[in-house]
Amino acid sequence: MRPRIVQADGQIGFHWATPTGEPTSLPELMLTDDEPERLLATHLEALDDAMIIAAAQFGELLGGGRRPDPTERDDLLTLHRTLDILCREYALGTELISTVPDLRAGKIIGTAALLSIRAREPLGLLGQAPLDDQLDPAPPEGVVSGFGQLQLVDQDKPWMGGRWVLKTEAGQRHPLTLSMMLFDSSGVNKNAARQEHRDLLRTCVQATTTDVDPFALACALDWLLFDWLMAHRSDPDSAAIEIPKGSESDAIMIVDAASASVRTRARFDPGLTGPLIGRQ
Image (cartoon, rainbow, N blue to C red):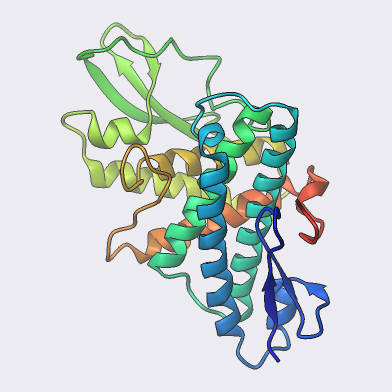
């Protein structure tokens, strides 16, 4: 008999069980299984299926169409914690067998991370966007002269992250996104913008092994990851993440960043450290 996926009616997400039916986690199973790579692949496919169900059930809430009622708030809390833990388990699994996430893994984990962020937003569980209280309002529609820059929150503490900012000729600073830099701006070196964003996100990931403020680090990780994912969706109305062939390093970055965010938030959210069993 093999370990199996358990997803009862009404359950958000899934959890693993041993051949005898005992609840467990993916990393625990992989430590003793003869074919751990099969478990990792099964986990990824089950996560993809779980997100399809979640999108159908919570799509209006995740898309911001309306605010959740009290029961739906509980469901969104369960959803984000479940997706976060499943992403963390996948990342730990890749480390256990020294495998590298491929493009499909990056797409699925990226989509799960984006859904988790969207689930946390109406619950007030996302920190303030970087520099939010220091920037001018969003620029008016139409052409605005200026140049985009990835501005750090603190030059001496790059792990605190940053965001794209439009600096106008009049000296104003408006909030930008990576998506606006890549698709709504002229004269932008898109490859250079992507690389600058990657570098800062990886700096934040590396900071998870150091003794820094977990709240500030979580905010930095979540914003930079969210901004990257929103700029790499299959279309503007979709949460599905696209990673072009030849960009395997981006898949690794996404898995690393999603896992780093969960590990960091687990330092102050005990709901990210418990088992998935019975989360309905």
